[in-house]
Every structure is written in C-alpha cells, then in structure tokens.
Length: 436
Image 1 (cartoon, one colour):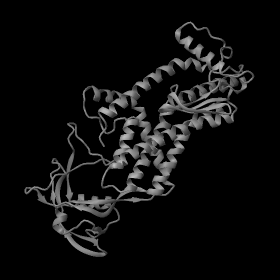
Image 2 (cartoon, rainbow, N blue to C red; image 1 turned 180 degrees about the vertical axis):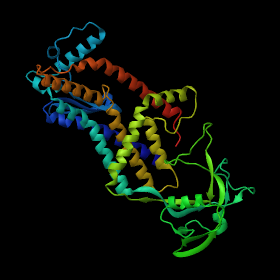
Image 3 (tube, rainbow, N blue to C red; image 1 turned 30 degrees about the vertical axis):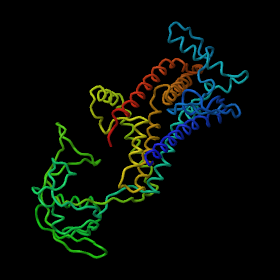
Image 4 (cartoon, rainbow, N blue to C red; image 1 turned 120 degrees about the horizontal axis):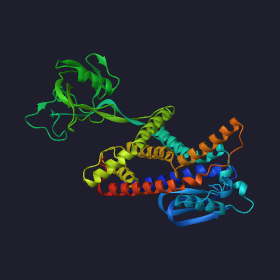
C-alpha cells in the first residue's frame, strides 16, 4: 500500500508541475493580450475539457507533458516576405505559417503572439520553466525547514563484534577467524553518545571519524554518555584496510572496478542519523547545487543515452547514475516509501526532495535551446531582438519578425528524438531498472 500511495503522489505532483508550467506560459501571454485557445495537460485523446471564455481547458490521456496554444505563434507569409517553398522543408514552414494565420480571428491580428516585443516573448517563454523552479524552491523549503536533512550524530546505533575484511561481504555474520572489534571489546554499547576521544571534545561524527582513522594501534581514553551518566573507557583501535569513499559518500573504485582501500584506525561503531532542520536561508544554496548537478547531467545527455542503449543491448546492469524516466521515478518513490526500518519523516523528506529535483530537471531540460522546447523559442526571440537592435544602431529600417516557422522541421526532428528516448527509458525502467 505504501508503494502504491507513493507512486500516486508522484503522478499527482508530476501532473500538477506540468499544469503549473503551462500556467507560467498562459498567464503572462493573456496579460500581454495574446489569445490562448487551448490549455491542456497531457497529450493524445482528450479525457475531459471545458471552455471558459476564449480558452478550452482539458486533460488528455497521456500524462507526459502539456501545452498551451498561443494564437499567432508564427508570422504570416506577408510579414516575412512571402518566401517561396521550393523544398519539402520550405513547405513545412509554409504550412506552419498558414495554420498559425488561420487561428487568428478576424480583427484580432494585433493579439497574435508574433507581434509581442522581445522582452514580452521572453517573459512568456521563460514563465513555464521559472514556475518549475518556484515549485522546486517550495518543496525544498518544506524539506529543509519542515523536516530537516538526515545527518549523522555522535550517538551510536550499532557496535560491530568483529572486523570483517574489506573484500568480504560487510553484511555477513562474524566468523571465528575474524578479529574482535575494538569497540565491543572496550564495552561500548549501542545507544552510547561519544563525548570525548583521546581528550578531544566531540561535536560531530565527521570529527570523531577523522580522529579514529588517524589513530594508530595505541590505547586512548574514551568518554561516552550512557543513560544520562558519563562512562570512562579505554579503547585500542586496530589498523585495518577499509574502503575509501569520495566527498559524496560513494565508494571509490579502481580501474578494474574493485573498491579502493586504505589502512586506517578502526573501532567498529556505526552512527545514528537524525533529521536536523535547516534555516530558510539554506534553501537557495541547495537549489543552486541541485540545479548545477542537473545541468551537468543534461550536458552529457547524449553520452548517457548511448550508455543506456549499450546496457540494454548487452543486457548489463544499469549504472546507479543512469538517466531514468517517469517509470523509474515512480519506482524510486515506491521503494523509498515501502522500505522497512526508516522513519516516516525521512521517507517523506526523501520523496519531497526527489520531487523538487524532478522540477529542477524540468526547469533545466526545457531551457535546452532547441525547438519545440522553451529554450528554442527563447533563442528565436533573442535573435529577433538582436537583429532589431543592430538595425537601430546602424540606422537601418526596423526588420520584420523572425520567421520562426523555419525551425518547424527541426522541432519535428527534436520531438521524434525525444519521443524515442522517452520510450527507451520506459522500456529500460521496466525490464532493467536502476537498483537503489
């Protein structure tokens, strides 16, 4: 049940994010006088619709996107010099201009989108992605301020009874051949809070971990708090080969794919984790970091798609950093919600954080400068504005609107590619999902 509820939440939030994205386009467009004939969430057959004023609002069967139809997106033939259509690409552009012109009602040519100034076009086109960024801010604020972020503490959740070799399964039981763990031998118990180590007052797990790893095989004093009382102990770490983790707490692997290890001091203790609420001022930094990480993913998207194809062709497990689609996102949500032994607050925070990251992904992805994505329209508007500014500086006549209909063939090509990648992701997320 928890699995299904989490998947349902993802679907609802995804549809709401799509709907608000389109609201971000529609509201400024109407504000600037552009007629908006359709506002739709989804693609394909219409499930429900209602006309209010001059706009038809509705839901469609395939919840993988949405659109608002802005009347007069492309300037008519007369506005761009009535270029001849000598090739099939030219005919596509011509047909797009004619279809756009047919949507303009008699006497309402001034309400066509192509008449807007460059700044107004930018506001309309950027309104959708910015709405996703606002949603991400709100969700991340709920996570950081309302729930907090899970952080390791100096209170111990478990104490190892033995030292399991680094190349062995760390989840296995202790064997008679294993060396006894120093923590258990010294009398440390689960629930103890480390107060000081070798005379140093402990304020964080990272500080304690660094002290332990740098200690050799020498006895040091240790003070823990147990049931409200301070307990003095003496502990002798052992030097053991332990795995190396990077700054993101991910296992470092060598060229052969084996874990990299190093000799460090080892006690055999595991910290607990608790939710620590953050300041509202921390939200912009977290959103900025997540946005930058998403930009790096989008920048390497072609290579990641190639890796995805290779994993399907060769039937190999997908990398944990592989791109996923809506099916994979739903699966992640279900697994987070149904995992045993995790506090509900951590589950809720993780789910909201994932949804915030999804909206940041929508923000970044839609800014790719290719039609039919919003970034493609932004580039077209900037080009049109630049041409006019150059003409003004040079004292030339004001040029007409940019013939954005010429980008229609490119838009069709991009749409087909994105559709194919989307279908590939759905297939891969079902038959060869990313394991978390």
